Amino acid sequence: MSNPFLTDRLQEFGTTIFTQMSALAVETNSVNLGQGFPDSDGPAEVAEAARRAIADGHNQYPPLPGIAPLREAVAEHRRRFRGQDFDPDGEVLVTAGATEALAAAMLALTGPGDEVVTFEPYYDSYAAGIALSGATRRVVTLQAPDWSFDPDALRAAFTPATKALLLNTPHNPTGKVFSRDEMMLIAELCCEHDIVAVTDEVYEHLVFDGEHIALATLPGMAERTLTVSSAGKIFSFTGWKIGWACGPAELVAAVRTAKQFLTFVSGAPFQHAVAVGLRLGDDFFDGYTAEMKAKRDRLCAGLAGTGLEVLVPEGTYFASCDIRSIGETNGIDFCLGLPERAGVVAVPTMVFYDDREAGAPIIRFAFCKKDEVLDEAVRRLGAGLA
Image 1: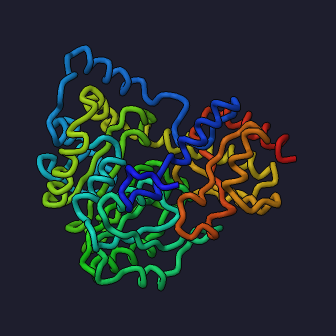
Image 2 (image 1 turned 45 degrees about the vertical axis):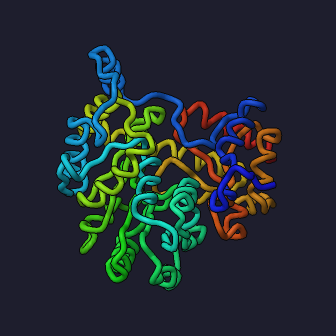
């Protein structure tokens, strides 16, 4: 039944699958590998910086663009890791996580009659953000098991109504890291059609195979790309909700105008702490990647041992499985029954597709958990799926 209090373009969005599965996890005392949040805190020095900022009185509204030390740290981080140069005073915007940056970008840069090209499966907030702006999404399907896409399908997705491209790499939920050739094609099409690109790069430090390529660094893209990232995924403080957007001043100003009437500002003391985090040494960033790669390998090996076909991710902290390997075909039914069957929560990726048939047999597990939690989940799955 439709909700009379929602506008037509939001009718398809109700309670998210994450909310449903989290409730199931609590009700059934299941191991929750559905939601993508770590079960341990990030660097101690970053946490201490937040406590110090609170004690020092940084508890009132920060400036709308974000505090200067964090904007400067973001610019330094982009230069250090991606070779990009941004002016902290006009080309960097601090947001309430990456989700707000992406939603504000859609509201600011697209509207009714516009089309936004993106890949499916897509993180659910993408579809909602596009709908909020009144634009229409045009999806190109990533094909399991290698998550490749048809270049001709991507070309066909661009029309005279295309206003923006929304790209996530490393990609949630598949774990795909787009290759250089794929990124070059995407860049060529953006330039050919003279559109804006919005890139979600929150998993930029979680690349295990291949390389992370920032779209804005490719020919013709710096002047038309808004790059989004987040401290939650880099430092394992997801509850702090500190993200940022970088790009040409006119794009950032547009997004800032929309953001002003969403959250206005957020997380004053956490902004100070994230500025400390972004300046940590390579030992932290390298160690974080290595730690998550080891968790990926640990969970994927365990899942394979239960009979599931594992689609090993190149990045992020999610691993997908094809349940047809154990005689199942509907991921939603399978995941809704899994807590009772095995005491484990996973997410059906069918909910991230327009083409539900393509996503029907694929489910997703998060491996950003303690090793003992991953091992217990595998033990339960082994017993429950036997």
